[in-house]
Length: 194
Image 1 (tube, rainbow, N blue to C red):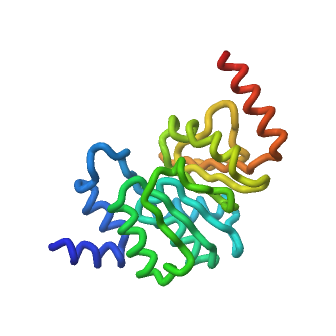
Image 2 (cartoon, rainbow, N blue to C red):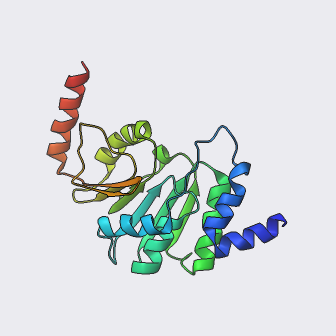
Image 3 (tube, rainbow, N blue to C red):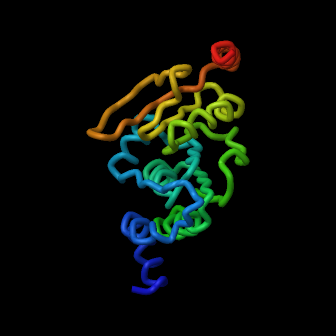
């Protein structure tokens, strides 16, 4: 099977394409682990995604979460990934799904992306990365924005509002508190480190 065939296969079935191309991901990039379509559905339901939401996926991989949000709810969606190949696949998948006018994928560092418009942020990052991204979420997200993470929480300083276990997988949900509460929480965490 040549590269063009794999690209076409990816447009029809992102699961197969991303698995087939995992060996092409440069070793310096973080590992890419798929969220199954079933878990994508659970994440969107737990976040109570609805029409009018703006969904951001930090570390979007093949784009499946924002593509599904756009297909199901007509949401605007944004994904960012450090892997340019993953972004190319996400764009092809969005086009194949007919939602490329609703979603945008960017190659870059998630810390450089302005997420202030997001009403929902989805994550599938390691625990250490969640802790690093938490200050960004606190700085940029509006009160009431929902954050959903697959498998990894935000540490003891910010317990999830809800957690669901699906066999070996877990999904966590947080709702952004008012800014005053965030400031108090951050000060408490900083005092605990001193």
